[in-house]
Length: 297
Figure (cartoon, rainbow, N blue to C red):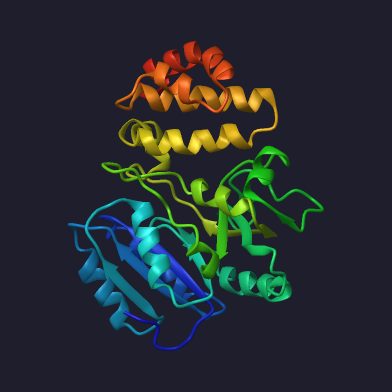
């Protein structure tokens, strides 16, 4: 489906067997104070009633709704599909179990319209929260009008998940690369790639109300790592390469080697291939213990 009238934002929702909670997100979209958006759902091979539900929601004609169904390949492949199909200049990923605060779209466009002429900005970074006045972690650092995702977390000390809106034209240059036989690599893989060339305008406001359900990635992070070790290795290698202190490199090296424990290669191979083999060798005993304890849960 294509957007019948041009909109500024694509609210993109990847979904898999989430018919039971999609209507909550839909209601929050209908309630937006600004309707300058298009809701694009990429169904990653659901076997429940997702298609019928989306068709019923679209038939209400309360908001513009698009639907694409593909074979199950994981959230990041669904993201790539969404970016390729997106006709709007801004791309805003909102998961199927989340909802938006009533003025999220309005706040995003107000902020973007004030900075959009800055070619060094890739988009906007706001906050996830439990309610409009309570971010999941910290508020944005004071005095920061723009930041990279790396700097936000590892230099400014931000805690908690963020809501990120990217320029679609930039996302098309940085697709997710998912290892063969796997279905997941964390969103920060693309964020860190974009960080190398662009910043994000900060928006110190809760945009997404997050609801971490038992069948989601966040509640099953260790299981996701076990099932997708090559993606985990790739991401943690990026952490090592970007870290500017020994402690950050050491912690990232531990997690990098945890990925090797669950891959077809050995930790020893991971040490040899590490960006800094000496640090990886020091990290190996800790990685081995972590892989056999915490990551088995």
